[in-house]
Length: 100
Image 1 (cartoon, one colour):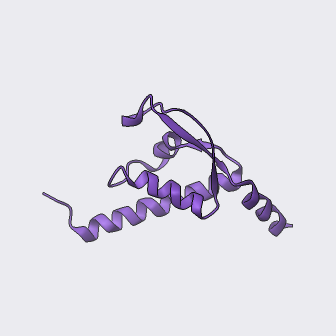
Image 2: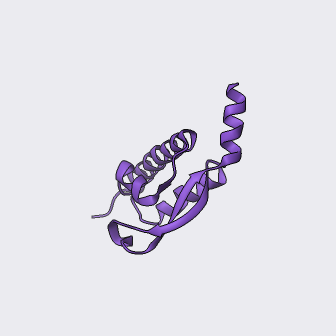
Image 3: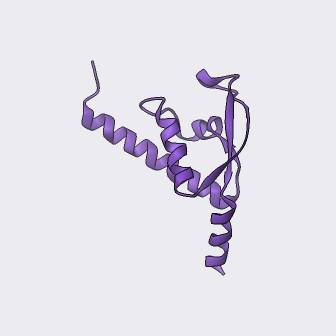
């Protein structure tokens, strides 16, 4: 039985909002991370392609930048190269200047 579209969209929006909020917090804290670490905190999205959308959105909002790669350690991507994400230094600088 398939999931009704409204429930699917609500689950996707909730998952994405939680993920984006966590990425923003990690960026403010200066934390580097991979999708594996993010996955451990927010769980699986409704569809696997949502990982790319979430990380692209966070990058486009200026929260994070790519900072290398390493082998994934869990899930279906185990052993594949996965990006390491780091706080966007320009955004962090602006946050600290705004707080002063």
